[in-house]
Amino acid sequence: AGAAHQSRRYDDGAIEDTRRRVLGTLASCYDFFALYAGTEGWTLEQKTQARPRPERSALDRWILDRLDGTAIACAAAWENLEPHLAARALDSLIVDHLSNWYVRRSRPRFWGGTNRPDQLDAFATLHEVLETVCRLCAPIAPFLAEDLARRLLPDGGSVHIRDFPVPAGRESGATPLECALQPVLDAAKLGRARREKASIRTRQPLQRLTILLPNLGHFKAFPHLPSPMNFERELMDELNVKEIVWEEDPEAAGVRT
Image (cartoon, rainbow, N blue to C red; front, side):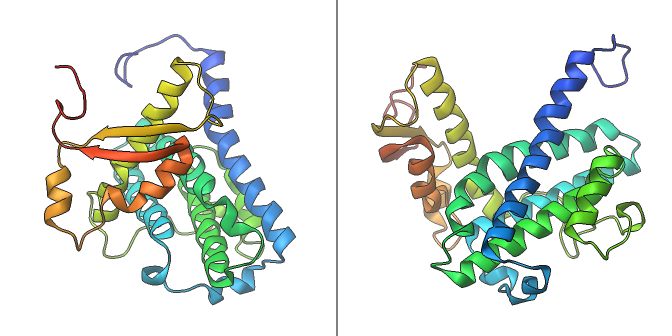
């Protein structure tokens, strides 16, 4: 595709694809939130009833970590006059992390009310992510950002006069939780692609998934830190497999070199 600063032919199709894939996905995430907030009677006043961030589930803490990392990346991109890098960071957050993982894996938490504290955490987390993403998107998608931001915070005024989100005390670089979940996200993406290539639908269960993780020993050496194995159940549900085997040795994992 070439570097961002190089000349290229304008493509209506590419613009439409980005609008549908990124902005459409953001709007769909909001629609999901609004639907179940209305169904479950969640209101903005209940946001204060959510537990502090360190006490929430690993999934909540992870998406908030990803949100902070994206805010840092976007701020640096705008400071360096590189809007394409801000757009790429938002693309990854909205499509890969918020929609394809957090919302997909959190869906049961938003209905039923069997675990009310966890449900309140989920609503508060998703609301925070959506409202912050609106502020991050405002320079790129001003009209959509304004519309969603006013729905999320009716008394917050225009998104274009709200402060740009700057995470307090967060430096660049991935957190331990982000490092632990990234191999799981990669495995989910590759697993879905492999199923599609083999024409095996997700509803058909598979017996075993073997994952080659070259730094598996690192995670085992520091058991007090988050590990990809902590998210094994989520990955099994995502790919509909009965067992996951983690291997560090390519030969043991059956990888041909």
